Structures are given as structure tokens and as C-alpha cells.
Length: 243
Length: 243
DNA sequence: AAGTATATGGGGTGTTTACCCTATTGACAT
DNA sequence: ATGTCAATAGGGTAAACACCCCATATACTT
Image 1 (cartoon, rainbow over the protein chains, first blue to last red):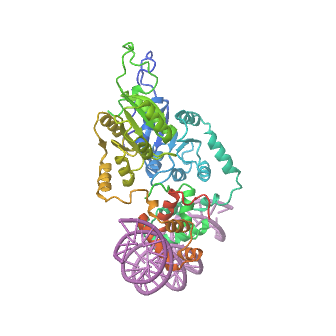
Image 2 (cartoon, rainbow over the protein chains, first blue to last red):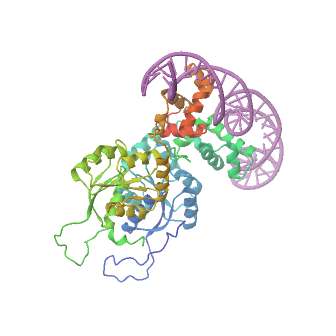
Image 3 (cartoon, chains in turn cyan, red, green, blue):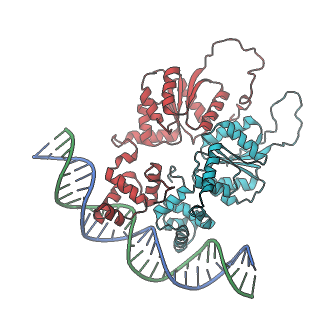
């Protein structure tokens, strides 16, 4: 966690006329979460240039994102989905609407229907694909920060498809899991054995095995392969990031 | 120091004081190749703010990149690796030596030794991981455009490793597998046990197990979870279609 | 106060995996 | 003809997994 929250109240002369008085900064605050440093810094630069948000923090990874969000309570959360550690969707689950005022814009390279569905459920207000124009990102941040929702066209299409499907009851399964079980699901899908899970979470091997059995029963899967596919499908793990 | 470019980004009547004379633009020309539109536009914005390069073009995909490079003959090529269609390395292969003056900086999310090796062979002069700081990108562009080479630390490490290894298995790991092994990879990733694979392929359990062990050793994975992630990553199985 | 959900533990059992070893056959190449 | 590789098949072992049973403590709900 860098000290990226320096207040630049100094503000350049903007419109050259009014002398900058020590007036309250009325801009919305924003927390930027993106794992790739270069991309994160570019987002930061670009948003600075927009001069519409006060960037109160950046995070490179899910756990830090949760902590920063709880501490800084930003007006807007700009969130990547695929990250090492906690995924974007897990971040939202942890925050579980504990900051009702906070508006969430997801900025993602992928848009799988099931992930979208989960994101909506966890309180996402806007979605911008990394493949869409930068102006769309700006517009989304704009609208969402003002209380509207914003989804791009292909996304709406995806949403319609996702919501049209008569809840193939595989989609809702993830909600059957407790937070602990989701946590363990992620670890298993990242190749951790029951023993490793136990030691990482400081619980006994038997508890780890019990959680494992319970979550697999809830999800209706009977082996690791099925569990990994489920986890990928729901954005809990990113197969392109090998742990 | 790191925020020295903030004033440049947005609207600019250029330096406000000196009237812009029709003087030759001596800046190096650069062609930006990156598939994700938002990222591409952010790179463009940031490079504009550096005011060090004249951005002569952008491309979202390999084929267009080749054509633009041949037509515009830029001084510098900033190239993404992972793209739909032609990959970055394929772009360099097509261009091979036809623009000897052109300097190449690769900007990539991954740095697999095998890919690195190919890129060096095809005439890359600098490499910046998307995980490294934005200042590194700037520095790399700086150095490389001036005729030097530039690689970040972890990259040099990777390069040493890549070049240390005797040739042969250069291409993506999936090509290490025999057809039979790929077939079995798919079955395992679809939750079939060794026994099921054996009966489905009409081979003995032991042969099935042997294939399994061999392909896992070739791929460098040590459990089913890793294998499934690999299979998903390479499109061998679709996690959204549960078998 | 009683019920439910969650997280934490344990015992036991049969199956499967991961990895070590050897060996035979056919195909294709130098 | 002599290799190397792919595919086949087997022996053995320790660990991990999948699944069944059970108990306790805490917290939240009704």
C-alpha cells in the first residue's frame, strides 16, 4: 500500500480567473483496483487528467482492496475482476454492501454471463469492458457516480442472455456457499491440497476436509476437475494466472 | 517526479506562450499495437503527455499492425503480445528485418521464457511487463528509441533462464503433447478418472495412468486442478459447458 | 427458548492420484 | 540397423481424495 492518497488540493489554475481559495474538495472520491501496475498507473493518470474524481487510493490485489475500501469508504470503486488473490467478485462479496453509498464500476477484460450475474448480485452499478473505448469508461464513471447505472451494449446483451436463461440452477449454486467455503473453493481450485488449506487457514486437516466435502456436495461436483471448472466459470479463479 | 505529466493530459492550447511555428517535428514516430481498446487509448494518452513521440498510428490486432508498420515505417513499435489473430511474435516474424531502422518495445502481461526467446530472435529491443511501473515503460521507450536495449530485472532473469536452457521445446507447452496425450488431457479436465479414461479409450488402466503421468510431467503440473486450468487456458475444455 | 446455520473438530474406509521403476511393440528417421 | 518416439502394459508406494458417520460451540432468528 503506497501513499497514493496525497491530496492535491493545489489544483492547477484551471480557468485562470478565480484565485484558488482553500475550499473543500467536492469531487467524488475513487478507489482504483487493478492488478497490473502499468495499467493501474495509466488509469490513475487518465483519471487525474479528467479532474473529476479525487483518487484516494489504489490497490493491486483483492485483499488490499477490501481493506482500503473499508477504511477509505470511497464514493466510487473502480474494480478489475481477474486478479491474483481475491477476484473482483470476491471483493464485492466481502464488502457485502457494507458501504451502501459506494458505487461500483467494474472494468474487465472478460464478460462471461455467469460472472456478470454474480457481479450484479453483489452490487455492481456499471460495467466497462477493456475492449471498449476509453470514453465509455469515463461515461460509466460519470453516470454511475451520479447514481445511475451504466452498462455497454454488448454487456446489456450479455445481461439479457444471462438473465433470460431460466436460472440453470447451476448459477445460483454459488450462493449456497458460505464465505468460508468460497474461500476454500478458491484455494482448492488453485491446486492447494486439503493439508495446505488447513495450514494456510490455521484450521485442522479434518476441518479442511469437512469444508471441502460440504462445498462439493452443495455444488454437486464430485472431483477437483469439476470444482475448478465451476470456479473458473464464476470468476473465482483466473486460469490464465497460474498460482 | 512521477506526477510531472499531469498538466499535459487534457485540453492543451500547447504551450500558451510561443506561437507554434511551422517547424519540422523532430520527434521519433511510434506505432502502438494493443488489442484492448481502453488500454490502447490510455497508452496513447499517456504517451501524448510525455510529448516525446509522435504517435503515427495505432492497431488493435496483428494483421493491421503489420500493414501499418510497413506503410508508416515508424521509428518505434510498441507491441502487445497476446492478441486475437496474429500474436505479437507473429507480427515481428512477418515484418522480419524489412524495417531495419525500427526499434521494438514489447509490452506484455506475461513473460514466458519460450515467448521471450522467440521475441528476442525476432528482433525485440526492449521488454516491459504490464506488471511493472509505468515509469519503466517510459524509460524503456526512451532507451530503446535511442538505440539501446532495455529489459527489466525479472526479465533479464527470465532471459538468462530461457537462453540457458538448450533449445528444442520452444513452442507453447501444448505442442509438447502427443495427440493421444491431448485427448487424455481433455478427458481428465472433464472429470474422468484414469479408470474411466481407460475404459473409454479401450486401453488398460495402467496405460491410462502412464499417459496421465507423462502429460502432467511435460506440462509441469502436479495435480488435476493445475491440469484443468491449463486445459481451460488453451481452450481444450470450456468451463461454461459442464460435461 | 428453540431452531438453524456456520465453523470447528474427530473416526473410519475404500478409491484415486502422483510418482517411482521396467518393458514390449511398431513407426519413422538417420 | 540402430535410434528415438509414441503407445501400450505392468509393479509398487505413499499421499490425497471422496464419502460416510459423529460432536461441540457460537451466533443469529423466530
